Amino acid sequence: MAVMLLVAGIFVSYAYFGMDYLRQSDALSALTAELADAAEELTQAPAHSRNDLDEQLAAAEATLSEARSEFPSEIDRTQAIDAILKLASDSGVKTLALVAQPWATVSIQGSDYRVIQLDLEIEGSFSQVVSFITELENEALKTLVINEVRVTTEEDISHGNNVTITAKLVLATYARAATTD
Image 1 (cartoon, rainbow, N blue to C red):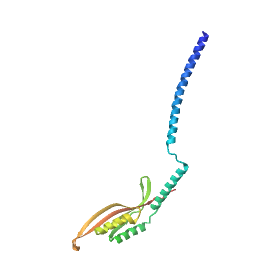
Image 2 (image 1 turned 45 degrees about the vertical axis):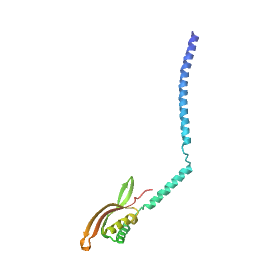
Image 3 (image 1 turned 90 degrees about the vertical axis):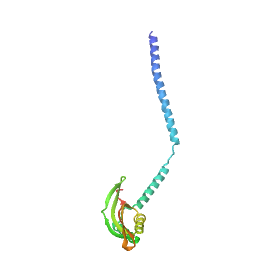
C-alpha cells in the first residue's frame, strides 16, 4: 500500500508539473510567434543608416540657415520708413501721415518675433494707389505685412471728375527676436 501511495504521489506530481510545463510551453510558443512577427516587420521597415540621417540633418540645418538669412534679425526703423516714403514718392502718391509705433515682441505659433507697426495714410489716383500697394507688397521689405487697408474716395468736379483715393494702411514689419542659441 505504501508503494501504491508513493506511485500515486509521483503520478500526481508528474501530472501537476507536466500540465504546468505544457502551459509554459504554449506561452513560449506564443512569444516565439510574436518575436518572429516583430522580426519580419523590422526587416520590411526601411533601414536608415547613420550617414542617411546625418545627410538629412545637414539638409534640414541648411534649410533653416537659409530661412534665417531671409528673415532678418534686425530692421533699421529709419531705413524701413525711408523705403516706404521713397516708394510712395515713386508711385506718385502723396503721404499724408506716417506714424511708427515702438518695437514690440509678439508670439506667433510658439515663436517670438520683433514687430514694428506703421500707420500710413496716402492719397492719389486709383492707379497710383494700386501701384503703391502692389510695390509695397512685392518690393519694399521682405517681412512687411499689410494688416489693414481702409479706402475712401472723393470726386473732384473742379478738375474734370477726377477721383481722389485716400487709403489708410496699417503695416507691420517683422524681425527675428533675439535668441540665446
